[in-house]
Image (cartoon, rainbow, N blue to C red; front, side, top):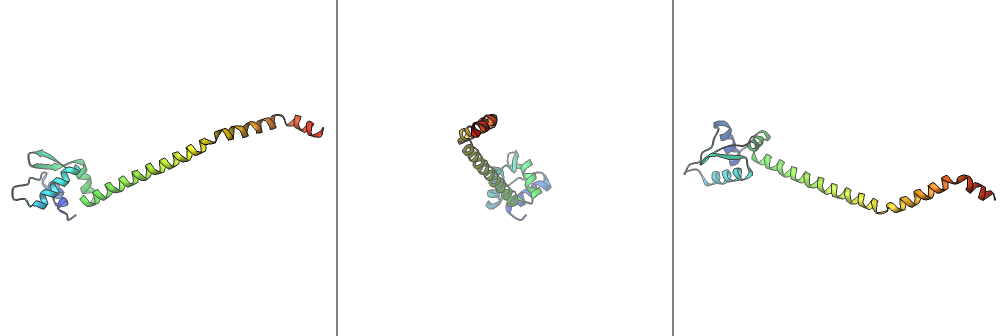
Length: 125
């Protein structure tokens, strides 16, 4: 936890708020905007920021970069789940294409087994 975002999150955790001033460095202001955009901090009053639940989660995980990586991993996992679900559905649809073949085979088997005695008599002649 050594990025500018992590420093801001840590300061808010320790003091309860982060209040930038006019002499706050530009890189800190960029990091502040990034944290706000991702929803890790929220504005308490004008130019005073506090942690949100997401920000607390980021601190528990180990910082901004780890939180962002976890968020990306979750998105990738969701995409994989959706992709696999679509593949399974396509497979199920393929199997349903030939439902009529199964119906005909079942009917033929039913006719044969239902009339086995008559068929045996017919074969014996």
